Length: 469
Image (cartoon, rainbow, N blue to C red; front, side):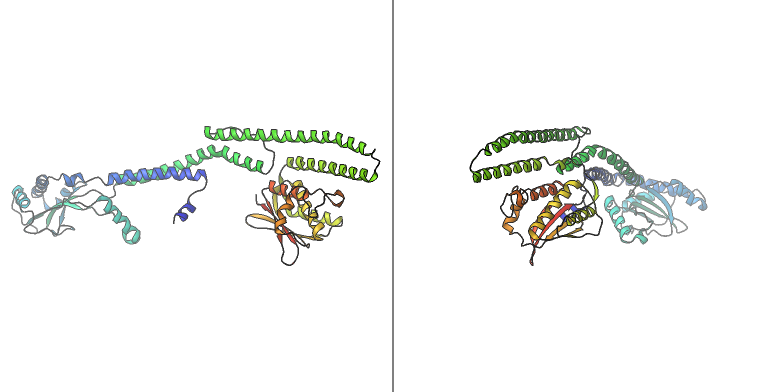
């Protein structure tokens, strides 16, 4: 149950703040409403029987002095909201089952004494135990929900707290009833309407205010995502509440330190390249004076290898593609053109790509990554077939070769720098073992991942998953 409730709760800050404020406002207003509705009925507590009996007798005495045709008009003029006078054909009322000869004898005698002339039967009924106002209201609302057509326009019934009945000469009855309060008064309806209006106004104000407050946070999240993908971003303007400004300021300081670190690393690598060139050249010159040709060839071969390693390391560390701007491209067309280019230079590469998938990326970096993966597949698996499909979460590119596969224990080593399947670092046999590392770095910079999976029959599947953006 708790899980279902959590799933319905808003996930974003704007929705949570609106829900919090509306809940607080609603509960406070409803609490106030129920507090006033639950107040005791002061009339029921402070009923003065003698005064009410005198009032009933006065009404009867007045009727005796005017023609019968004016009785209804007179009674209507004497009636108020809580005290009603009316003519009835009988003394039976909704809750006056105690109208009998033995009930309220003292009150009945007092009523007869106050009458100016002799009347027939008189009855008095008093009920000081009025029902709870909230209970009456809830019962009415329940009936209205249960049977909306029957409850329709009916209002909750008010109880009679005090009733007198005086039999007139024409055998009709002069009734006086003192009612309890309305279960659902007019002011309560006004309160609910004002609650609705306040809620709507509050929603507009909160949505506008919260969106303005969290705008820097959204910008911070977007820039953090771009930074995580290796894109170049500018510092964020410090605005909004002080807490948000502190977070933005900390992010800007981190961005500044990262940029300085990357710049320092690039300069250090450039200096390293320049500094290594001199000793390598000097060592090559000294090697020329070695008389033993076999030793000379081995030393020169190792120097060439060192030079290639240096160049490859610097090229990998610099990664010029990291400075590339992201843009929308058709990733299917990008991979298809790459497969055609590799096929044109004699590599056994085929592809099965039909759909168009727009993807925001750094196309040069991705092209280099897929080129390395496909070339590696052709080298060790003879031929490669590339396919691509999209699901709800990611774009999946499968590079399938026909080789012998890679043992699971060796798969992770494939992506480590200077690691090759043939355990060779001879540049003539192809590369320095950085191709898969560069590919993995480029894919991870786009928030993706690479998985290797051996097929049961034969071959290896390189599965690249790129998150949808």
